[in-house]
Length: 227
Image (cartoon, rainbow, N blue to C red; front, side, top):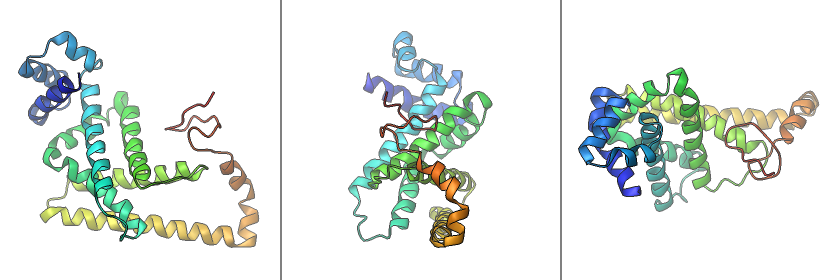
């Protein structure tokens, strides 16, 4: 089954360049592989949507494998995060047009929710690969912040024609620096007695949020109900 899915996905990529993530691409990929149509539809029940999702998740898997194989201990933590985003984009560089087509495909309202889940999943994969063990609201804020950074960097990367995407990595570093500056300001606010009192209500609400599997029900992305 995995072999058949891989064959169909690989066969789809040349067609995506011309037809996008569409039924035409899916049908052409199935025909090219010679895989029985019924089996193909059982592997990708929603056709091009599941095909595009599989393409994105394969990139995530390649990124995680590289993060785990590289020696990141000498890096500052903010550089490890940047490395995760960079590795993710480098995993997709050979199929950049498929990513471009995917950004348009997941911008369609009917596919937008799936697209948001994929971006969240990429951010979660990076944090998890880097050993994040947060259990409170930070589990969500870390992933929400990185999702925004990743999404903005992808859009910049798609339009970047600089050598070795040097402009993209500079853009990414600026976005990471902005996040780190925000975290520094947040820590200063929490350390200020007056500001701390003003934030007592919001901080209490945030303290009720728990990471998935910690026993707190939530409708936020990525949460698994423990009941």
